[in-house]
Image 1 (cartoon, one colour):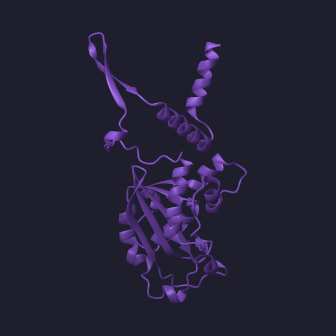
Image 2 (image 1 turned 90 degrees about the vertical axis):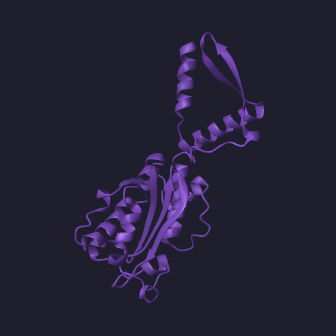
Image 3 (image 1 turned 180 degrees about the horizontal axis):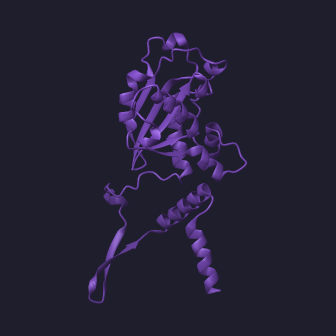
Length: 241
C-alpha cells in the first residue's frame, strides 16, 4: 500500500475567507515503511497573513515573495499524491484549503477524487475520547519525539505525523516478508513426519525469544487499547471452565 502523510500551512484558519496555502509537506510510505521520497514547497499566497498566523509558522511575505504560486506546482503535487492513501491530521482543514486552491484552476477536480483519506484526528478521538488529541498531545501520549517542533512547518509536521500514525496503528513497521533474516537470527526448524502427508516445519524458539514475544504482544495491546488475541484467549478459557 502506498501512503502519503500530508500537512499544509496557511495564511489563516478559513479558506472561505480567501486564505491561501503557503506551504505543503508530504512524506511517502510504501507498505508502512518510509521510502525517503518527499514533496515540499513554499508558496507565494498573494495576500496578507491573518493576525497570529505568522507567529505559528514563522513564515513572512518577504520570505515567500520569490516562491512559486500554487498553480505553478499543482501538477507536480498532484502527481506525487495521485492514487495514494493520504494520512492527514484534521483532514477537513487541509482538504478544504487544497480543494479551494484546485477550484481556482480548471479541470483538476478535488483531492478526494484522486486519493483515499485517513484522518488521524478522528482515529485519535475514537481511541482517546474526551482527551486532547492535537499533534503535540499525541506525541506526548505515544512517546513520539517532537522536540524539533518549535514552529509549525509542513514537512516537519508530516514527518512527525508519520510516527504518530504508526503508533496509533499499533506501531507496526514493515511486515518484512520480502527481507532475508540473517543466519544467526533464524529459528531452528525441524521437520516431523505427518503420516503420508508432506513434512511440516516445526519451529523451536528459545526461552529468551518466547519472553521477547510476550513482551512485544503486551506492548501492542497497551498501545491499541484492545487486543483480539486476549479476547479470544479469555473466551477459550471461559469455555473450558
